[in-house]
Structures are given as structure tokens and as C-alpha cells.
Image 1 (cartoon, rainbow, N blue to C red):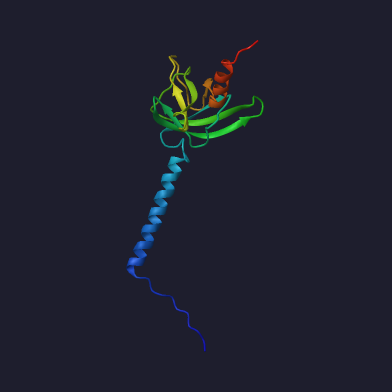
Image 2 (image 1 turned 180 degrees about the vertical axis):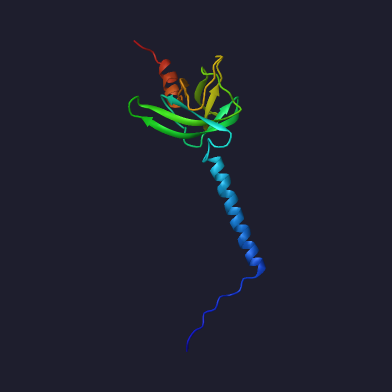
Length: 158
């Protein structure tokens, strides 16, 4: 006896449900790509670079903030083998014009909070151009080393 294989017909509700799932998945992928900074630099943003002694807690996708407001995203982080410093690439919105003596600081939201890259505007009359490097930087501060300094400063020395 030969078995006959036939394709089942899909009801309109099954087709609609499948289409809705695909649309939702596509929307999630677009949202995730925008949140991670993929495609940054194309839509109203320009890229800057900065070199840090320590970029602990910073990774691709980390927020770049100015006055507590997100204005960009870290797009790359590499170790420079000549200087042994962390070279970061990040984007900033086109409508944010930074003086060329501005500072980039690796900051944290608190003791248990996340890390972000904070931009502190300078006072120079000259502005940073796309692709420029921010020369004034401050790396991450290790809370463990601060606690060790605090504890050891209270010890009596002979």
C-alpha cells in the first residue's frame, strides 16, 4: 500500500499569525541593531576617537553622554600595542558641536551602576571635526584600589 503525502492547506488565521511573528522578529532585530550602535555614523552622527589609560567597563554599545543625556555610542574599543592604552571610537550626534579641548571621561552611574563615556565640553573657540581625537581623557577609577588606599592610609607607619 502506497502512502500518499499531501500538503495541508493553511487557514488564513495561520498565515496572519505567521506574518505577525515575522514582523515582530524583524522589528526586534532593527531595535537591537539601533541599541547596539550598529550602523552608527550614517544617520546624523559623526565619529571621534579617544585613548584611555583604563577603559574598564566600556565596551561596544556603551552609551556616550553629555550632561547625563545620551548623545552617542561606543563603536569600537581596541588595545594600542605601542602605547598600551585603550583606543575607543565613538559616535556623537551631528547637532552636538564639541570644542577641541573637551574631555572624555569613563564614568559610572554609582557603586553598582553601569559604566558610560561622559563628554565634558571645554572652552576653546575651535571645534572637533569628524574623525578627530579627543586628547584630554580620564580613564576608569577602580573602586578596589580606592578602598585599599583608604584602608592603608589609616595604618600607623614606624
